[in-house]
Every structure is written in C-alpha cells, then in structure tokens.
Amino acid sequence: MKTVTLPTYVDYLNLLAQQPQPSGWDYGQYLAEVGTRHLWSGLSSTDVFILDYSSKQYPFLSPDAKQVIGQPREAFVEGGLDFMLYHRHDFAVFSETIFPDEVRFIAQHQDEDLASFRFSKTYRFRNQEGHYRTILQRNTIISVSEQSTPIAIFGSATDITDFTEKGKIVHQIEQYDSVNQQWKLLLSKEYFPDIAPDNLLSKREIEIMKWAVEGYSSKQIADKLHVSFNTVNTHRRNMLRKTNCQNSLELLQYAIARKLL
Image 1 (cartoon, rainbow, N blue to C red):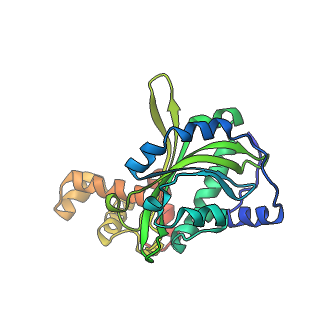
Image 2: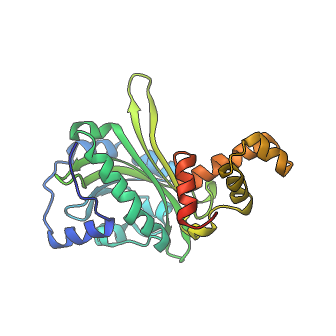
Image 3: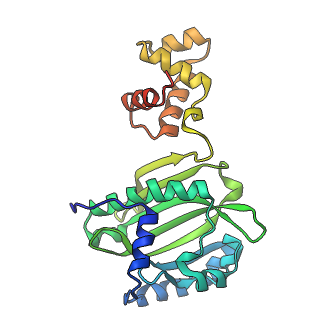
C-alpha cells in the first residue's frame, strides 16, 4: 500500500496549474473503443469522454455532449478542465471528501488492477439557461501518478435529473467480477450538501436515537412511539445512510459531535 497525502480536488488543480505538461499517454486503445459508441451515445443521451488531467484537456468528448451537460461541446474542448459550472455545494463535497476518498482507495491497490474498478458520483451542473441538471458520472482509471492521483480517466456522463432525489450526492466505488459478470459494490456514500449537518436528521430519528442510547431495543421503542417495529428499524437504517456511519457507535459519535442529544 502506498503512503500518500490526501489532497482536495482544489489542491490538485492548483498543483496542475504549477506543472502544465502534456501527458504523452497513448489513448489509441480508448479512442478506438469510444469510436464505436457514437451512435449509442446520442440515442441514450450519454456523454462518453476521456479526460487527461496532466494536459487539462479532453482527448475525446462525444459530439452530443450538449444534450447531456446542457453546455456546448466546444466549451469543454476549448476550456478543458478550467470549464467548470458545478453547483458550489456539490463541488465542495467532491473536492474535500469524494476526491480524497478516491485517492485513498487508489493508493490501496496496484496500478494494474485499477481498470477493474468503477468510480461513480452524482453532481449538479449548470446548463446554458442557468438551471442545474443532475449528472451521473462513471469512470475507470487509465493512468495514475506516483501520488495516486488520476492522470487520465475514461468515463461517461448521463443526465439523471428526473430520476434522482434533488440535492443528494451519491458516491460509489465498484469492482467488476469477470467470473459472475457483475459489479460488486465496495463503497457507497450519500451526501446532502444543501442541508446543514445539524438538520440532516429528522426530529423522529433523533427521538429514536435518544431511546436507543438509553438502551431500549427497536421493539421497545416501537411500543413507546406506537409505531411498528419495521418503522423503527427503517429510521435507524436511514440515519446510518444519511450520515455515512457504519454502525450505531459511529452514529452516536456523530450525534454527540453535533450536540444532537
């Protein structure tokens, strides 16, 4: 396992600005692959792309990118990595949390294994009319630096505005199981950047947490609140999901840190 410093995405962009050098990476294999996906890209409203961080450019971007992102393809081709119209709340989560998590994950694996992993994230991006679309981006790693930061990625972007909860960011990392031909979920986190951390949990959820801290079981809490056992357990699962806590102890620490109890 590599020992690396976990930069924010902003830190990484600043580092790239200080070291503007072309990648020199051979994209022939990937360009041949995306060349067969032009028709599929247009019909499915999916933007296929290659992003080269070292040159801060897109060696490939689907001709129909505008129908997905809502901005002219030329803006990305000419602006490269500097053309960013992310929702500021979403960008903060990506820069300060998601990007460091991915760098940490990359550092824990051999470079030759990275092609089997898929990194997915949702975010809001402003279109030409000034409205935000929710985008699902999925990518694999083409190349990484010695610091485990991505040098180039191969991925897709899909407009999922009408199919997702407004203001929620989902971040996942999966590994492809070639034997069973399916993706295995390794990491899944959710973020609600428009909601203050102190307001993330509902009054009922906090009430259930307080009873649980006092040692009451889900059945006993259900009896006290005159709700079903399943309702209490659903609230407990939702609390873990919304706070990205792995267990009740982590949830308790989360609540204490934010003075919710």
